[in-house]
Image (tube, rainbow, N blue to C red):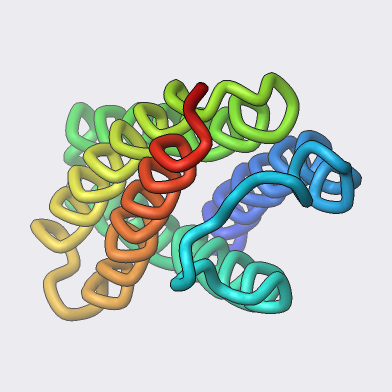
Length: 161
C-alpha cells in the first residue's frame, strides 16, 4: 500500500469524522437528544467512539488498497469511479449527523441512513471485486450502517408527532 494513497484516504475519513463530530459532539448531551425515546437495543453511548474509529480505519485501509491495485493495473476509469463512490459515501456519512443531531430531522435522518447503507454496500462490492478477501473486512461497514438505518427509523417512528 502506497503511503500517499493511505494518507489521502485517511485524511478523507478523518475529515468525515470531524464533520460528523462537529454536528453531534455537544448534541448528544442536549435536552433534545436526552428526551428522545430510544429503543431498548440502542447501543450504549460508549460503543460509538469505539465502533466508528474502527470502521473509519477499515474504510481508509481497504479504500487505499483498492485504489492502489486499480492504479497498478492501469484501470484509471475504474479507480476514478471507486474514488467517486468513496467521496459520495463519506459525504453521506458526515451528513447523517447534521440531519439528525443538528437539524433534528428524524425521518430524513432515517432516509439518509438508508441511502448511506446502500452506498456502503456498493463501496464494499466495488472493493471486493478488486481485492477479494482483502476487502472482506469492509463488510462490517454496511452491516453497521444497516443497523443504524433500523435504529434511526425506529427512533423516528417512536418520536413522530
